Length: 540
Image 1 (cartoon, one colour):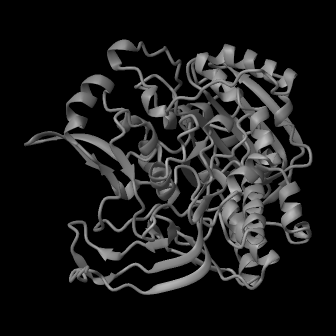
Image 2 (cartoon, helix red, strand yellow; image 1 turned 90 degrees about the vertical axis):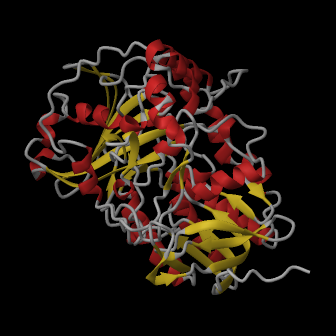
Image 3 (cartoon, one colour; image 1 turned 180 degrees about the horizontal axis):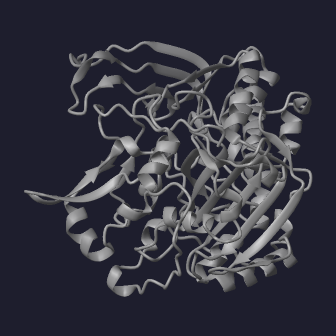
């Protein structure tokens, strides 16, 4: 007979039919659709950010059809930032020049809308609550709960008030156990619970490794006469070299606001590459710098983007739980769009669970047989083609477009962590970087615009399993790339009396997960800090 653990913490328990982890577009759309179909179900959505939308960052130009299906009258009361797409431009950049190119077929945006995805989620949340969904911001799911058979039966919210040394502070509060008949993971890219469950249930046994990019974004206020609301600009070329999958976007909003950002594929080879610096260089290109000069940054941040697509899609169901949205990996890479896929997957999951009496079984097959998967299959070879260089990627993209994705082959994906060359084996290209004039001056100032907050006296949520590697093997083989790929200057190699050591500035973290993805030794694990910690993005 098992004796009770005398050190066990007594926890409050909340019970629901369904618990959803993540209040992004997938999680909220799922909850709304579920309550539309069966108002009797008890549904709760938990979100680690301090407020709904505070951790949401995306371009974002959205296709409205899934939103039309979810909320047919949404245009009568649109999200606070919602600008009809009016004009597309596509540019090839050189060091100081630019050439306009035809718009690729997947990037025509007529009929679409430029939105702030964070503001859109904050707009969706009260509509879910009006249907009876309970939404809890500041609740960070630290681990999943399992029954004797291993099936998922809910989540445990992280404890509050734990000091850095693990002791309990005066305000210590044990996390609540939220138990449910089914748990829906909608954590976004590289969700830390999803990462564990994929490994535990071997959900990726029949798929390629997932691939990612890092997207870094800023929202600017400039004189209103410079802005053409609805104008959408994309570019590729400089400052990326032919070995880096990268490109920029600039979207004209209303009220003198401009959203802009830069995406770098995390399969890059150069250990000296700096994604944040590439974005700052891009902003200072002669095509964009005059537009921003004299303006001010309103908000800034970064996040990982799931780009593996069709061949990297894991199994989406397991006993007691299922995956939707970006945590499943549904982004359409050539369109640079995932919101419509997230909403679709949330709705499909709700419809499946209502029809199956809350059984996840069969959801994977249902999604793979849907138009969600058909869209991903058609574009499955676009991103992997760029692994052979920019120009091969462009030619391959043209071929895939002409054939409608009917190539008899499927290109393979490899894990991003294994793509780095060692410093002695890689000759960094001449980057032709220019002198920057625009803010921010460095990554720490960028962190200021992210308004990120973490209690300094809480356990470090970036777990490095063996820090001795950092000052020995990693320093020699890769020159400590974590000090460059992190957009928030979280990782530093410092010298003190004891010698060199890794310093983790965890309070800077903007929760982008790049370190968890790109570390060449796979020894960094991002876990959730206390609920409510992290960035506080405004309209990103």
